[in-house]
Image (cartoon, rainbow over all chains, first blue to last red):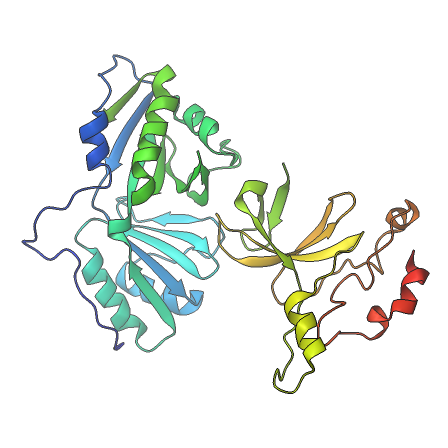
Length: 211
Length: 134
């Protein structure tokens, strides 16, 4: 067992948290419902985000044991479980982003620490610092093409890929978990900016925000 | 805009994602207490500014946030190669393909590491050698 002290950032019965986009939703509102929207935006709020750092081999073992997922070893790879709710993404040669349903992250962190023991690693719970926005619809790719210099042609960006790159004037983790879905992992401090950028960029195709 | 190959992400990325961090392969004097003031000053403050091949440290700031090296031609801005930290360049001022030398470009003295406190090769840093490589 590692001797790092852990604490649950969101214990049961704690006062309600606010998503990074709460203020934007309240101030910007959501655009009027379109009959045939080209783009659908949805926030996946309050997921559990963990950043794992360390050697690929030890982390892979621990992650297989606790999550039942293999650590993606290839650069820019994204793996998910069958339900698509738990995922691990390669961020750097020694860094991975794990996203699990909200509420599971503290238990997972403890299990990982248990499994890793005295190995050289770091686990940081960044759930409060970022949020996930999903982008769907036939024009979703056009919206992204306006926003990021990264090549998002299906040939260059197949399902199961994720990169951290430039988005508008902010940075974002862009990933493609399914054929018709794009996910943006945005930082809390950029959330309002990215949200408003997306509404503006998607306005010409018709955009709805699901809540 | 450049497309720069990140050796860690193993793909080309937009220049916007990178930051230059100055000259590469600078070695810290092994025993700072024992080295001369001149050697320490060289290590801290003096950098190459070659006309020709230059080895630079860059960081993939928006991507994987890893540091790596770029061999760059300061006249044509051509990126000759990128390689990971801890590796040695395969392209240096000495073995640069002939056409670049013929175009009136003077290859940098030594090409890499000429002012560090512990030059990796005396010959590279000998001022009298420089004329020979024009």
